[in-house]
Amino acid sequence: MTDLRRVAVWTDGGVDVVPGDRPVVTAFDAGLGRGDGVFESVSVREGRAPHLAAHLARLARSAAALALTDPGEPAWRALVDAVLAGWDAGTEGVVRLFLTRGLGDGTPPTALALLSPVPAEVLRQRAEGISVVSLGLGVPADFRTTAPWLLGGAKTLSYAVNMAALRHAHGLGADDAVLTSLEGRLLEAPTSSVVWAVDGELRTPPPDTGILPGTTQARLFARAAEAGRPTRVAHGTVDDLHAADAVWLVSGVRGVARVHTLDGVARGDDGLTGQVRDLLAR
Ligand code: PLP
Image (cartoon, rainbow, N blue to C red; front, side, top):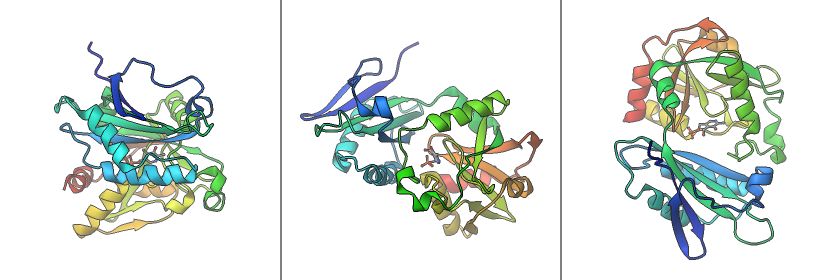
């Protein structure tokens, strides 16, 4: 099978594009050794990245939280344009932007854009829905907002805990996890935001819980408000999800994945998934 993956590397002289299997980073990079960096995953449809601006804004906020040198929006746009050049418009893709501290010795940071097709499993979950389990994160819901060293709200490369939560969920026979605070408040999924519907109102947990503010959730709520559908940023619990009319995990790459099973209990969506997708497509 042809390897469609490719990488654009930010250099002093501009942008280099190389095939996805080519080494581009030194083994001494702080992103590799310490996860000391930030990233974004940006959806590519019809050969374009229509929501890039929101991701670049969040990348800049994440970089500031880690005191990383950010090459700036023109550099990121040049990297994205470079990897997208010639991409087959019929193949849904994901651009991942990586910014690391590099060697950490005052030399420039590492800035990369990687483009690859969206994995088939993501497409399957979008089409068929997902089963999720709730897992505790052990952090009080209001703690991260007072503890900047925990990097709440930043999309850091230190995703080993998120990946372990996913593997744990898989081990329990589920597709994904919903993480909860020490007190049992809803937070987010390892790579998605949690949204649920109550009497036609869309709800999601507040960002001051230290979760990553989702660009897809924000767009969904903005479009819902324009369309006259009520939205609310509110604390919730797993019991609230069981009682909700519908529950979704949403992200830029995944889109809207309907939760059909929560902690082993089957649940419906009251026919709302299509409406939520329509809102996002507006
Ligand atoms: N929460 C976490 C932890 C994530 O990793 C992601 C995905 O990037 C999201 C939420 C959803 O963010 P977005 O909608 O911007 O893709």
